[in-house]
Image (cartoon, rainbow, N blue to C red; front, top):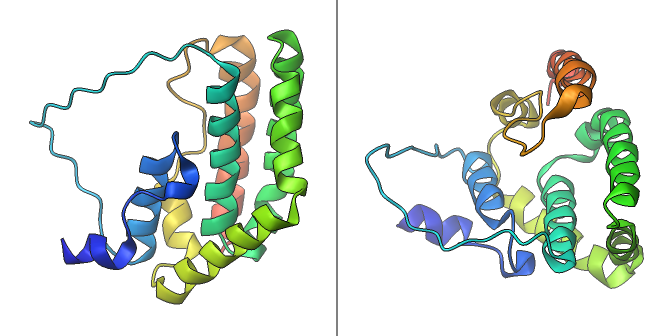
Length: 175
């Protein structure tokens, strides 16, 4: 339990969505391992209703997690892939009428007060971290998995591109 006291539990800044992934990432950054207990049974009352509120928090928190946990240099090398994925996600948001929520998410990141909080959290995380970005990045995946509708675009265009780009960035990262 002392490792969780050192790392901190779920971030209240996330409210919902990605707080578990962020906790796992911070555990890795402090040099601890995340373990799987395959015999565990967890009941999670969950119904993804595709509400605009859920979409906002998922997208916002995904970016907060990336901004807080990676070094600036790593974000620089990830930015082309992140930009292309953002273009695809924005285009899809027009198709499923979530573009207004997407604009609200962009607006969130235009607020300097939100950046102050993100950068403060980054400073706290970086003061304790022992793992390199290369070590963390090597634990990540270079493809989109477990989507409800993977589709031809993701399977045959996006995933091969992301996989190739992932391998390239993994070779570049030395920090």
